[in-house]
Structures are given as C-alpha cells and as structure tokens.
Image (cartoon, rainbow, N blue to C red; front, side, top):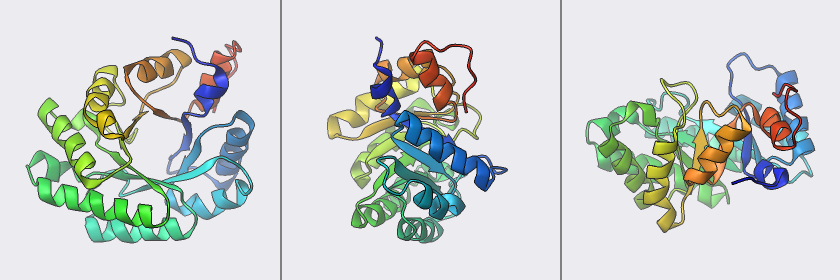
Amino acid sequence: MEHDWRELAAKIDHTNLKPEATPEDIIRLCQEAKTYGFAAVCVNPVYVPLVQEELDGSAVRICTVVGFPLGANGKVAKCAEAEWVLAEGAQEVDMVIHVGGLKSGDWKAVQEEVQAVTELCHKKGALCKVILEMALLTDEEKRRGCELCVEAGADFVKTSTGFGPGGATVEDVRLMASIVRPHGLGVKAAGGIRSYADALSMLAAGATRIGASAGVRIIQEARGQKGKDGA
C-alpha cells in the first residue's frame, strides 16, 4: 500500500515538542512544513505566536498541545491553556487525557474534561485531538477512553505524547480506528514513527493523521531519496 508522497505529507503533523527546542528550530520546522506540504506544524504552546507568523499565508495548520505531557493538571488549567493558544492562533489542539482518572474509572470527569476543551476548540473553529497515552492503558481502558472521546465530541483520538513509555503500535491504531472512525473521528498515530514503512503501517491500520518529528525523512524515503537525514 504505497502513497503518493504529497498525499502522505498532507497527513503528517510535522512536530517538535522537545523542551530544548529554540525559536530557530521552530522556524526551520515551519519552513520544512511549507516546503513539503505537511498538514500541520505541532509545537509547544509558547511557540504558537511564532508559528502563526511563520505560517502566515500558508495552508499548513497550527497545532499545539494542552496538558502536555502528563495530562494531570486538571480541567480548569487545561481549559485556560486551550483558551490562550486558541486566542494566539492555534487551529488544532492535542490535549492529554487524565490518564489516572481513566484508569481509576472516573469516566464522567474524564469525559467532562475532554468535552470542555473540545467545546472551546469548536467555538474557534479548531480541532481537538485527545491523547490517550495508550502504552499506560489496559485493552479495556483503551476502549473506554476511545468511547469517552466519541461521547465528548472530540475530532481525533491520538496514541501517544511521544514522552511516555511507548509510542504508536499497529494494534492500538487498529483498535482505536475500529471504535472511533464509524463515528466520524480521526485517528492520529504518534510516537516512534521514524520511517516511510512505519507511516504506511499506521495508515494501513486505520490512522488518518501521523504525528512525527521525522517527517522530512519519511517523505524523502517516500520520494526514493533514502539516506538523507530528516528533521
């Protein structure tokens, strides 16, 4: 299952969420995103204003994270963070679910938190993607987390922060897709996707978006330019 490289690029969120990322790193990320036609640039909240400047007039979307990377800072804090990044120009918000709340069965609180952030996003015409951190969940918790995101009206479920104990797996993506895609939600596979083959396997499993810091390398491989280093 091969993809035209342009179609593949249009499904990649070109990502740099490293704490040590500098403004120069983020400017380079934006330039690469425009060059290759990536779906979005995904950065930490502090860089949303810079990304808005750099992507002005571009089709590349501005994506950022909320409650990142642990998801343990509460609904009020997540909503305040979401309001700020949306006011600064974010078009997509990847929020981290309260993992401990999900694992303890506090499903009502988890759903309410996701719904609150999603509603803020939708008021601004933005998308909300919910990071479940699948590597920390049992199969039943994975299913319930996906169901809660459907009930909360989110736009995507996402596998991982990239900072947890594991990244995207084909099995997890397949499970997520089976639950959410019939309801119109997308699946973002993120965490450890480093090659063209990795990206293709995630798309084949049902992912509709790929989050990767190696986007340039992935597209160079897709174009047959193996051996050149990516971002």
